[in-house]
Image (tube, rainbow, N blue to C red; front, top):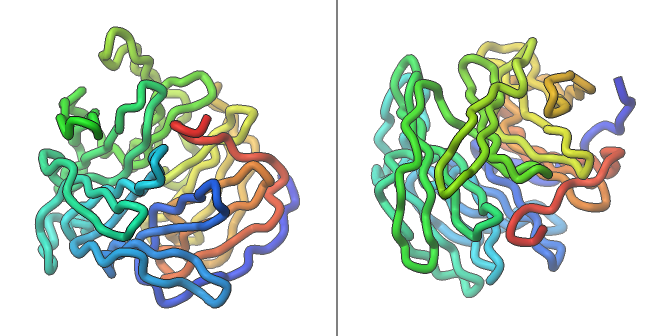
Length: 286
Protein backbone atom coordinates (compact mmCIF):
# COMPACT_ATOMS: atom_id res chain seq x y z
CA UNK A 1 0.00 0.00 0.00
CA UNK A 2 1.14 3.54 -0.76
CA UNK A 3 2.33 5.68 2.15
CA UNK A 4 0.39 8.94 2.24
CA UNK A 5 0.47 11.91 4.63
CA UNK A 6 -2.02 12.22 7.46
CA UNK A 7 -4.98 14.49 6.71
CA UNK A 8 -5.38 18.02 8.05
CA UNK A 9 -8.69 19.07 9.60
CA UNK A 10 -9.82 22.22 7.77
CA UNK A 11 -13.40 22.60 9.04
CA UNK A 12 -15.31 21.35 12.09
CA UNK A 13 -18.86 21.52 13.44
CA UNK A 14 -20.35 21.37 9.95
CA UNK A 15 -22.66 18.42 10.54
CA UNK A 16 -22.96 15.50 8.12
CA UNK A 17 -20.58 16.85 5.48
CA UNK A 18 -20.99 15.79 1.85
CA UNK A 19 -20.69 16.88 -1.78
CA UNK A 20 -17.15 18.37 -1.99
CA UNK A 21 -16.16 20.20 -5.16
CA UNK A 22 -13.44 22.51 -6.44
CA UNK A 23 -13.92 25.57 -8.64
CA UNK A 24 -11.48 26.78 -11.32
CA UNK A 25 -10.85 29.83 -9.13
CA UNK A 26 -9.51 27.68 -6.31
CA UNK A 27 -12.48 27.62 -3.94
CA UNK A 28 -13.72 24.47 -2.22
CA UNK A 29 -17.42 23.98 -1.54
CA UNK A 30 -19.24 21.20 0.29
CA UNK A 31 -22.72 20.49 1.61
CA UNK A 32 -24.12 19.46 4.97
CA UNK A 33 -27.08 17.10 5.00
CA UNK A 34 -27.92 17.70 8.65
CA UNK A 35 -27.55 21.49 8.39
CA UNK A 36 -29.23 21.77 4.98
CA UNK A 37 -26.51 24.09 3.73
CA UNK A 38 -23.88 24.68 1.08
CA UNK A 39 -20.58 25.80 2.62
CA UNK A 40 -17.41 27.36 1.25
CA UNK A 41 -14.08 26.61 2.89
CA UNK A 42 -12.16 29.60 4.22
CA UNK A 43 -8.75 30.02 5.84
CA UNK A 44 -10.38 29.63 9.26
CA UNK A 45 -13.04 26.98 8.59
CA UNK A 46 -16.24 27.28 6.59
CA UNK A 47 -18.82 29.92 5.78
CA UNK A 48 -22.42 29.43 4.67
CA UNK A 49 -22.79 29.95 0.92
CA UNK A 50 -26.50 29.05 0.79
CA UNK A 51 -29.04 27.95 3.39
CA UNK A 52 -30.96 25.43 1.30
CA UNK A 53 -33.03 23.66 3.94
CA UNK A 54 -33.85 19.96 3.87
CA UNK A 55 -30.86 17.69 3.41
CA UNK A 56 -28.30 19.04 0.93
CA UNK A 57 -26.33 16.04 -0.31
CA UNK A 58 -24.19 15.64 -3.45
CA UNK A 59 -23.10 18.71 -5.41
CA UNK A 60 -21.50 19.44 -8.77
CA UNK A 61 -20.28 22.50 -10.66
CA UNK A 62 -21.73 23.73 -13.97
CA UNK A 63 -19.89 25.58 -16.71
CA UNK A 64 -21.47 28.91 -15.72
CA UNK A 65 -20.27 28.58 -12.11
CA UNK A 66 -23.63 27.47 -10.73
CA UNK A 67 -23.63 24.61 -8.23
CA UNK A 68 -26.27 21.89 -8.57
CA UNK A 69 -27.28 20.13 -5.36
CA UNK A 70 -29.00 16.80 -4.74
CA UNK A 71 -31.59 17.83 -2.16
CA UNK A 72 -32.86 14.75 -0.34
CA UNK A 73 -35.49 16.71 1.58
CA UNK A 74 -34.05 15.57 4.94
CA UNK A 75 -34.87 11.95 4.08
CA UNK A 76 -31.32 10.96 4.99
CA UNK A 77 -31.97 8.13 7.42
CA UNK A 78 -31.19 4.73 5.89
CA UNK A 79 -33.88 3.16 8.11
CA UNK A 80 -36.71 5.01 6.42
CA UNK A 81 -37.97 8.53 5.73
CA UNK A 82 -36.91 11.12 8.28
CA UNK A 83 -38.93 14.28 7.87
CA UNK A 84 -37.08 17.52 8.55
CA UNK A 85 -37.79 21.22 8.29
CA UNK A 86 -38.13 20.85 4.51
CA UNK A 87 -39.35 17.42 3.41
CA UNK A 88 -39.36 18.18 -0.33
CA UNK A 89 -36.68 16.41 -2.33
CA UNK A 90 -35.37 17.29 -5.77
CA UNK A 91 -32.49 19.06 -7.48
CA UNK A 92 -31.56 22.65 -6.59
CA UNK A 93 -29.26 25.16 -8.26
CA UNK A 94 -27.18 27.75 -6.41
CA UNK A 95 -26.20 30.57 -8.75
CA UNK A 96 -22.91 32.50 -8.56
CA UNK A 97 -24.72 35.45 -6.94
CA UNK A 98 -25.86 33.20 -4.06
CA UNK A 99 -29.51 32.92 -5.09
CA UNK A 100 -30.98 29.44 -5.42
CA UNK A 101 -34.01 27.72 -6.88
CA UNK A 102 -35.48 24.36 -7.75
CA UNK A 103 -34.51 22.69 -11.02
CA UNK A 104 -36.75 19.64 -10.73
CA UNK A 105 -38.71 17.85 -8.01
CA UNK A 106 -39.36 14.50 -9.66
CA UNK A 107 -36.39 12.80 -7.96
CA UNK A 108 -37.76 11.73 -4.56
CA UNK A 109 -34.64 11.91 -2.40
CA UNK A 110 -31.61 12.37 -4.69
CA UNK A 111 -28.23 11.41 -3.35
CA UNK A 112 -25.57 12.48 -5.85
CA UNK A 113 -25.26 14.00 -9.30
CA UNK A 114 -22.80 14.79 -12.06
CA UNK A 115 -22.66 16.32 -15.52
CA UNK A 116 -22.11 14.05 -18.49
CA UNK A 117 -20.22 14.56 -21.76
CA UNK A 118 -23.57 15.50 -23.33
CA UNK A 119 -24.02 18.44 -20.93
CA UNK A 120 -26.90 16.74 -19.15
CA UNK A 121 -27.15 16.25 -15.39
CA UNK A 122 -27.23 12.64 -14.14
CA UNK A 123 -28.78 11.96 -10.73
CA UNK A 124 -29.00 9.01 -8.33
CA UNK A 125 -32.29 8.75 -6.42
CA UNK A 126 -32.36 5.93 -3.86
CA UNK A 127 -35.50 4.97 -1.99
CA UNK A 128 -34.95 5.41 1.75
CA UNK A 129 -36.52 2.06 2.59
CA UNK A 130 -35.11 -0.20 5.33
CA UNK A 131 -33.59 -2.63 2.84
CA UNK A 132 -32.48 0.09 0.45
CA UNK A 133 -33.12 -2.26 -2.46
CA UNK A 134 -34.43 0.07 -5.10
CA UNK A 135 -33.89 3.47 -6.64
CA UNK A 136 -33.80 5.44 -9.86
CA UNK A 137 -31.32 7.08 -12.20
CA UNK A 138 -32.42 10.36 -13.77
CA UNK A 139 -31.15 12.64 -16.51
CA UNK A 140 -32.03 16.35 -16.35
CA UNK A 141 -31.64 19.02 -19.00
CA UNK A 142 -30.66 22.04 -16.90
CA UNK A 143 -31.52 24.45 -19.73
CA UNK A 144 -35.12 23.30 -20.13
CA UNK A 145 -35.52 21.82 -16.60
CA UNK A 146 -36.94 18.63 -18.14
CA UNK A 147 -36.24 15.33 -16.37
CA UNK A 148 -36.12 11.83 -17.83
CA UNK A 149 -36.22 8.62 -15.82
CA UNK A 150 -33.43 6.51 -17.31
CA UNK A 151 -33.96 3.36 -15.27
CA UNK A 152 -35.24 1.96 -12.01
CA UNK A 153 -32.72 -0.09 -10.04
CA UNK A 154 -32.85 -3.06 -7.70
CA UNK A 155 -29.99 -1.59 -5.68
CA UNK A 156 -29.32 1.56 -3.60
CA UNK A 157 -27.69 4.00 -6.06
CA UNK A 158 -25.30 6.37 -4.31
CA UNK A 159 -22.18 8.04 -5.80
CA UNK A 160 -22.13 8.75 -9.53
CA UNK A 161 -19.55 9.91 -12.07
CA UNK A 162 -18.18 9.55 -15.60
CA UNK A 163 -14.79 7.84 -15.94
CA UNK A 164 -12.01 8.43 -18.45
CA UNK A 165 -13.89 6.13 -20.83
CA UNK A 166 -17.06 8.25 -20.40
CA UNK A 167 -18.98 5.31 -19.05
CA UNK A 168 -21.38 6.20 -16.24
CA UNK A 169 -20.27 4.70 -12.92
CA UNK A 170 -22.70 4.24 -10.01
CA UNK A 171 -22.06 3.05 -6.45
CA UNK A 172 -24.38 0.32 -5.17
CA UNK A 173 -23.93 0.78 -1.45
CA UNK A 174 -25.43 -2.19 0.34
CA UNK A 175 -23.95 -4.94 -1.82
CA UNK A 176 -20.54 -3.20 -2.05
CA UNK A 177 -20.41 -2.82 -5.84
CA UNK A 178 -19.51 -0.20 -8.42
CA UNK A 179 -21.47 -0.58 -11.66
CA UNK A 180 -20.78 0.94 -15.07
CA UNK A 181 -23.08 1.72 -17.99
CA UNK A 182 -22.50 2.78 -21.55
CA UNK A 183 -24.82 5.40 -23.00
CA UNK A 184 -26.06 4.50 -26.46
CA UNK A 185 -28.72 6.51 -28.30
CA UNK A 186 -29.51 8.24 -25.03
CA UNK A 187 -30.14 4.97 -23.18
CA UNK A 188 -28.20 3.18 -20.44
CA UNK A 189 -26.90 -0.13 -21.81
CA UNK A 190 -24.42 -2.88 -20.95
CA UNK A 191 -24.66 -2.72 -17.15
CA UNK A 192 -21.51 -4.27 -15.66
CA UNK A 193 -20.19 -4.77 -12.15
CA UNK A 194 -16.67 -3.38 -12.43
CA UNK A 195 -15.77 -3.46 -8.72
CA UNK A 196 -16.86 -5.91 -6.03
CA UNK A 197 -15.40 -4.52 -2.82
CA UNK A 198 -13.93 -6.90 -0.28
CA UNK A 199 -14.60 -4.56 2.65
CA UNK A 200 -16.72 -1.51 3.32
CA UNK A 201 -19.62 -0.06 1.34
CA UNK A 202 -19.18 2.48 -1.47
CA UNK A 203 -20.49 6.01 -1.04
CA UNK A 204 -19.08 8.96 -3.00
CA UNK A 205 -16.12 8.48 -5.34
CA UNK A 206 -13.86 10.27 -7.78
CA UNK A 207 -11.31 9.31 -10.46
CA UNK A 208 -7.62 9.90 -10.96
CA UNK A 209 -6.18 10.65 -14.39
CA UNK A 210 -5.24 6.99 -14.84
CA UNK A 211 -8.93 6.14 -14.70
CA UNK A 212 -8.80 4.51 -11.28
CA UNK A 213 -11.77 4.83 -8.93
CA UNK A 214 -11.05 6.47 -5.57
CA UNK A 215 -13.93 5.27 -3.42
CA UNK A 216 -15.18 6.26 0.02
CA UNK A 217 -15.69 2.88 1.70
CA UNK A 218 -17.95 3.54 4.67
CA UNK A 219 -18.48 1.11 7.53
CA UNK A 220 -22.09 0.55 8.60
CA UNK A 221 -20.96 -0.28 12.12
CA UNK A 222 -18.24 1.33 14.21
CA UNK A 223 -15.04 0.23 12.46
CA UNK A 224 -12.97 2.92 10.70
CA UNK A 225 -13.96 3.77 7.15
CA UNK A 226 -11.39 4.04 4.37
CA UNK A 227 -10.55 5.56 1.01
CA UNK A 228 -9.99 2.68 -1.41
CA UNK A 229 -8.45 2.87 -4.87
CA UNK A 230 -9.68 0.39 -7.48
CA UNK A 231 -8.88 -0.13 -11.14
CA UNK A 232 -11.87 -0.30 -13.47
CA UNK A 233 -10.96 -3.95 -14.05
CA UNK A 234 -11.73 -4.69 -10.40
CA UNK A 235 -8.26 -4.76 -8.84
CA UNK A 236 -7.85 -3.18 -5.42
CA UNK A 237 -4.77 -0.96 -5.60
CA UNK A 238 -4.70 0.88 -2.30
CA UNK A 239 -6.47 1.53 0.99
CA UNK A 240 -6.04 4.70 3.06
CA UNK A 241 -7.59 5.12 6.51
CA UNK A 242 -7.94 8.82 7.36
CA UNK A 243 -8.87 8.26 11.02
CA UNK A 244 -11.11 6.37 13.41
CA UNK A 245 -14.55 7.37 12.14
CA UNK A 246 -16.69 4.89 10.17
CA UNK A 247 -18.14 7.29 7.60
CA UNK A 248 -15.83 9.18 5.25
CA UNK A 249 -18.57 9.65 2.70
CA UNK A 250 -17.25 11.71 -0.21
CA UNK A 251 -14.02 12.86 -1.78
CA UNK A 252 -12.61 15.14 -4.48
CA UNK A 253 -9.10 15.23 -5.95
CA UNK A 254 -7.63 18.14 -7.89
CA UNK A 255 -5.09 18.21 -10.72
CA UNK A 256 -2.27 18.98 -8.27
CA UNK A 257 -3.07 15.96 -6.10
CA UNK A 258 -4.82 17.74 -3.23
CA UNK A 259 -7.64 15.64 -1.81
CA UNK A 260 -10.60 16.88 0.22
CA UNK A 261 -12.49 14.30 2.28
CA UNK A 262 -15.87 14.61 4.01
CA UNK A 263 -15.65 13.17 7.53
CA UNK A 264 -19.41 12.99 7.95
CA UNK A 265 -19.38 11.08 11.22
CA UNK A 266 -17.00 13.61 12.74
CA UNK A 267 -18.80 16.67 11.35
CA UNK A 268 -15.59 17.76 9.67
CA UNK A 269 -13.74 18.25 6.40
CA UNK A 270 -10.21 16.92 5.90
CA UNK A 271 -7.46 17.64 3.38
CA UNK A 272 -4.60 15.42 2.22
CA UNK A 273 -2.12 17.83 0.64
CA UNK A 274 -0.32 15.33 -1.60
CA UNK A 275 -2.31 12.26 -2.54
CA UNK A 276 0.35 11.17 -5.01
CA UNK A 277 -1.82 11.18 -8.12
CA UNK A 278 -3.78 13.79 -10.05
CA UNK A 279 -7.55 14.02 -10.12
CA UNK A 280 -9.56 13.66 -13.32
CA UNK A 281 -11.38 16.84 -14.33
CA UNK A 282 -15.13 16.48 -14.15
CA UNK A 283 -17.52 17.36 -16.94
CA UNK A 284 -18.08 20.06 -18.18
CA UNK A 285 -14.46 21.05 -17.46
CA UNK A 286 -12.83 17.92 -18.91
